[in-house]
Length: 290
Image (tube, rainbow, N blue to C red):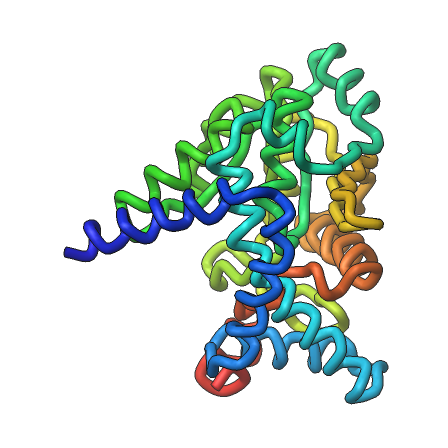
């Protein structure tokens, strides 16, 4: 029964994103308003995170970021659907975008250098990776979804842009990619528990942060780049730049990544995925996020 309902929802979703492009923004805005009005748990997570991470802002400034962030989540349904269901031709025809620093990544690939492409969780990250993959070969790392059916939809959608993807618990696979000159998308800005993490500062707060990137870079001898994304004048901007983190220790390297992500988030705070419980291991999911 659950699978049948999910199939219906996915088909309705496809119908929605295949509506004329000019309808997407008002539809996304209406969905965002519904999200804002409903007592959704993830709204609370977003509010808690924003209030914690922007202590220097006034209550009114924090509220503006929160309100815009929740309203922007309505477009996640649209942009993710576009990323997973549209053809390359339709995206190029209908989506305004530009990629900065693509030549630098292309040169690394020409030299046979593996590249760990570190990114932050933006609200439009699925479209970010799809568009990047349309313009240069990239690989991805992901988590398996609880639903087999949705996992297949997600994987098929992502593989429209990615050459291949590996489960985050299969490091040998993506380290092999890096050793053979591939470029791999990778993120550390979520709380994956304390088993493979250390407590590292994020926006001045203790946050469980994985330290695997240091080991990945050391073992694969890959280059590290950061891909930032944001909306500017109605156009999606992807910006690639070389990232030279502090390689003196695993903790210092992850801290330098957190610092860099923080600097980028501050530029466009309403586009960040604040809806995850980033501080659940340090502040308590049943305390801070209740």
